[in-house]
Length: 398
Ligand SMILES: [Zn+2]
Image (cartoon, rainbow, N blue to C red; front, side, top):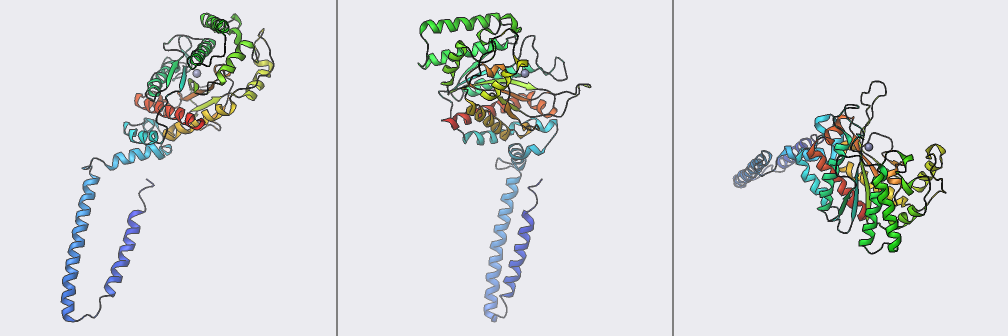
């Protein structure tokens, strides 16, 4: 709407001024000259009219789409690419297929590929752990079904750009947080080995692999049963320290745990108006503050000294870049929360040394977010924007 106003008004004013000036300058010529001038004037008028008529015809053909473009698609691209944050309602949140033009425009400004980079995707929940849903506590629009869909679309998107991608789960089964962490550490050992920078002797490597496989085999939701293995407790023991030190050097690897948000009124279970993506990360300070609080310590688990050495600045850069890139492409997913990029002590990012995030891809309780998360085309655009964000992060740290 705001693009409609200015053109015709400016045009009319300039045209009137020119006509008046030309007329006043042609006073009192001789008769012969007058006839000649009339002929010249008529000829010029004919030329000008012809040019105007031809221009008008070409413009009309252009507006009606004869040349393969039309005003409708231009407006759609403009709306979805630049100003659709001003729109609201479910229908407008479904990102139309026409946005491919805008998508390509964004992509071409980014690095051309992700060759040599690794991404570990962790689709949240699964099995008996249904996460969140809409309506509240229902079996519709469930978090684990959508997080695996996002991972399944994001994986080929990243692979098509040259990245090597790993998933911590591919089925709708239950996998504990520590199963996912053990899987991630094992993947990192494989990557380090592939790159020739595994810092362990063969015996130490085997010892760590055995301990991590044990954690996977327990796959328990009950922390006290031993499902955490050497990752139990606060601070970092020798095993986890060795893995952290190895992972700090894997600067071409990023981790992403994929989740959805929901917010319901505690009494009515009706949705609260929160929406948009949230991108969370850990820092040494945040972890140490969290773990230093006795309320957050697991009974019977080791309490160790505070640990420092996480890639704090890269974690923030990764998360802020993801937020900025995704919301630039999909303004509907701009958060209405005060701070959408923030530290949070999720175990799944706290217990690795990788640059990582737990990314909430929107509120399933909010109709605009839900329209995007439950539409295949929009989900594909969301995954493409997420891959753009990962590319942009690697571009910035190169
Ligand atoms: Zn979740």
